[in-house]
Amino acid sequence: MISSETLWLAIGFLGQGLFFGRWLVQWFQSEREKESTIPLSFWYLSLIGGLITLAYAVYRQDPVFIAGQSIGTLVYLRNLMLIHRNRSTSNLRTPTESAVRPRT
Image (cartoon, rainbow, N blue to C red; front, side):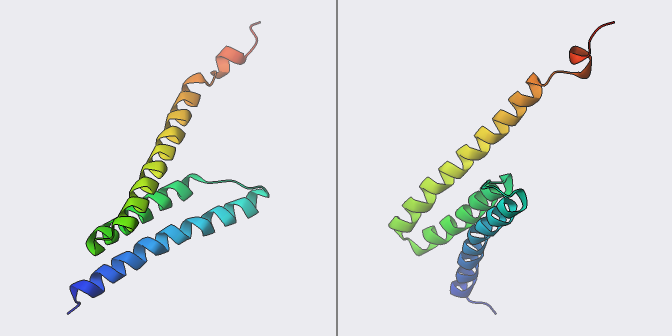
């Protein structure tokens, strides 16, 4: 049977692994596009990895780690909100084909 401590260590490493994975995603995307870019998946990996790592920090009762992960999580969530809001606003502003087609 797995001990509670071992389970929490696995959770902590999972969070850190996801958090690290965001850099790989960003790197591969930038290489593919031949310019520095931050894909949407970067922010989701940041948020999910940050939340899992925050849970681990709370379990460890580490106030420094908790503060850092809490603030980071708010930043990642806000970035995702801005991205989705911008995308939905852009979709509303996109002209339809009939609006841009000249009338004859």
